[in-house]
Every structure is written in C-alpha cells, then in structure tokens.
Length: 479
Image 1 (cartoon, rainbow, N blue to C red):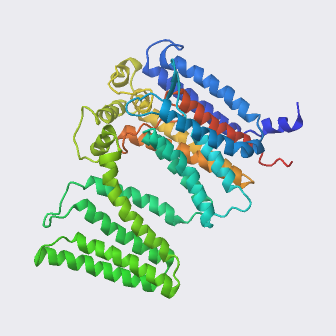
Image 2 (spheres, rainbow, N blue to C red; image 1 turned 120 degrees about the horizontal axis):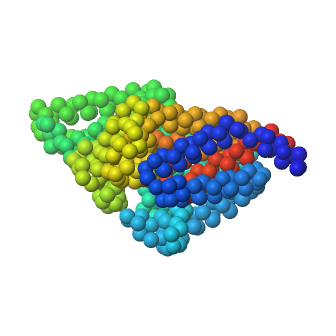
Image 3 (tube, rainbow, N blue to C red; image 1 turned 90 degrees about the vertical axis):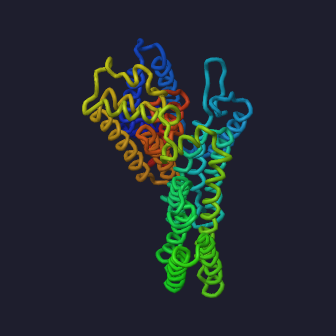
C-alpha cells in the first residue's frame, strides 16, 4: 500500500466515524420500531440498502484527494444545478412539490445532492488566496453561490429544502462577514413573526394594524441601534433617537386624545426622514456606513410588505395553513395542526423512560403521519421517553461540535469553510426538525439527519460528511 494512502487512513477521525455510525444505527432502529415486520421488510429493509449504498459511496469518497474536490467543485455545482432545473420539468407533482425524479419504484431528490456541491463551491471560492469577505464583489459572489440553488429549489415548490441553504451564511460570518448581516437575518425573522402573528389585530383605541405598527417601531429601534453600536456615530444617533422617539409618542398622543388619524403615516414619514438624514450624512460627514443602514431600512420595509404578499400569493395553501396554526391565527386539530398535536401526544406519553413497543399506540397505529420520516423523533420520544430523546439530542450536539472542532484545526481556509458549511447544515436540520415535532417551528418537511427514512437524504448527508473526513485527513500532508 502506498505510504501516503496509509497515512490518510490512519488520519481519519475515528470519533466522527463512530458518532456517524451510532446515529445511523439508532436511526435505523427508530425506523424499524415504527413497523412490526421483519428486518428486511418495509421501510427498514429499504433503509438498510441505502445505508450500504451510502457506506460504499463514503469509502469511494475517502479515496479521492482533497485537491480533486477543489478542482471539480465548479463542475459538481453546475451539474447539480442543471439537474435541479431539469427536475422542475420532469418531476411528478407530489403534494404540490416537483422535487422528486422517479423511475419505477426508485426515486431521488436532487436537492439533497445540491447541498454538498454548494458547500464545496462556497468553500473553494472562500479558499482563494485573493478572497476578502470585505470586498463587495467577493461577498456578492458568495451570496450568489448560496442563493442560486435556493431559487431553483423554490421553483420546485420545496420551501423547506430551500431554507436549509440559509445556514451557509454562518460560514461567511465565521470568515469575517460583519455581524450586521447576521442581525439582518435575525430581524427578518422577527418582522415575519410579528407581522404575521398580529396581522389580524388592531389597536384598542385606533384603527391601526398592530402587526404593521409594531414592525415599523422595531425597524426604527434596530436601525438606530446599528448607528450607535456599529457605525458609532454619536451625533447621528442622537438626532435619530430623539426625532423618532418624540415623533412616535407625540403622534400616538394626538391620535388618541386630540384628533384621530392614521398614525402609520407618521411612522413611515419618520422612516423616510431616517433614510434621507443618513444619506445626507454620508455626503456631509463622510459617514459611509450610513449607506448600509439606509439600505437596511429600505429592505426591512420592503420585506415587511412582501411577507403578506408571499403568504397570500406564493405559499401553497397547506404551507400557509401550517404557519397560521403555529402562530395561533387558526385553530385546527384535524388538518394542518393534526401532525403536531399527535406528535406532542406521542412524546408526552413516553414519560421518562418510554413505553413498551407494543403499547406505543401513537406511532404503531399510525396516529402520527410521517412517523418514520419527518416526525421520526416523536417515535423515539414515545418508545424511549425523555431519557432516550435527551440521549439522541446529546449525540447530535456532540456530533456537530466535533465537526466544528475538526473545522477549526484545518490549516487551509478551504477545509475550514467546508467544515463549517456541513456543521451549519446539520445544525439547521437538527433544530428545525425538533422544532417541528415540538410545535415550535412550522412543519416544512425537513428530515432529521441519519434518522428520517429516505435514501436521498441519508446518501446526501453521508457525502457531505465523508468528503470532509477526507479533507481533514489531509490537513497536514505536504505535497
């Protein structure tokens, strides 16, 4: 055996491999526990076949040198994007989604394989010697690499899979992206939640929509805070703070106690004043960062209005219904809220140490739909109880932290960026899936890695991980 290859095999991180194997085995047992047939029958039998295919693929990936992955990243990225576009036209419509290519009983979901190609492409671009995250051109190209597959998957009407790619922005943050963009993402979530949740409520004393009014106030607060703590322009902060505070309080007092009028006019006038004042300060005082704050305000206003448009015209009826049930806008225990309700019952009935397999009525008798795919965690909660559920969660946390540890020890930016990319993807899948079964997040069809039944997802996660294992194994080899 070639000495270099021997070194590679010896340098494989055994802890990560053991964690992967443990999660895969526990995942298979969770799928098998939902069924009552033999080992090789039903979904559990098919999952064994996919596990074997994934392991073989992983072994092949370990034989490919790191520089090869970097060299072919663009080809893989373009090929998977092309396959994703092709899927839009040839896939069969399944529950409003066109994301599966079927050939008889065999079917794959190309979106699962676009993840590793996008992660590789992003890591390759970030790993260039002349790359600088502070360079606007480099930053925009990175955003384009992430957004392009998202748009293709959205065209397939697979919103959940598209949202996974947002996790890749954490890679940019690790590589030096300013926290203002991370704040923008978090504030966008706040605007969406507040705007949708309170969209049907009006103020007690004024005919003003609570959702719209609250979001404009939050936009004012966050944008002024950015001026203070990121731009560090005290004079601009003082002017904006007192103008917005006095204008908001005074308009509310006049509308309630003197003359009733639509105070939203004042709120938008204040936001327009903020934008104009910030732009003037760029010219007068050379405060260049003010441009980003002005753009943030414009983008926030546009996003605020686009949320209602997306809810009414873009989202599928079942997606809209799930969000309305989640935010308490609609009480529905028989349709959109049925899955979550039955999932909570299953997890709660498991108690501390779980129930006997034959007495697990929620999952065994099919009360929980998709109990072997998106809602696989509730079957763990019912059969293994709090102890088993906590153990699975701890294993995932250790697994993700281990990947971050491996990413940090890379001696090249390429390896570190790819490591953070897959850690971010696993983290988002883990948190969103648990949020779905617990009723914290909308049900958007995101699988639990290595647990949810599905060949495409298991193979896709394995490819993500084993490419990184090879990259990590080469981290100290000099050519």
